[in-house]
Image (tube, rainbow, N blue to C red; front, side, top):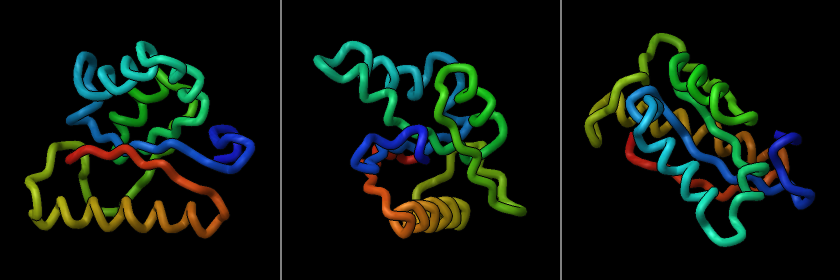
Length: 116
């Protein structure tokens, strides 16, 4: 967290699973938006990508220095989850719990999430 946060302890975060991590998918478009935006490239230094499965984590390590593997025992978050399905709700609650832990540590978060 400390490596990605700015001096005010603010992080930009996004969550990622393999469904959105494959090459030429959403994650590449997301990174491109930082590169082509006006004055946004340096914000990549404050971006933490939270990977919800091993494949997404490995892909993140290939394209970005600030990656975190958020593991959940007994649940496979690698595939896209249907909105409001049991697995989707588990994924959302796990992600919210993680965000709460970061806030408890005194960080501020700008979260950019997609429907994974």
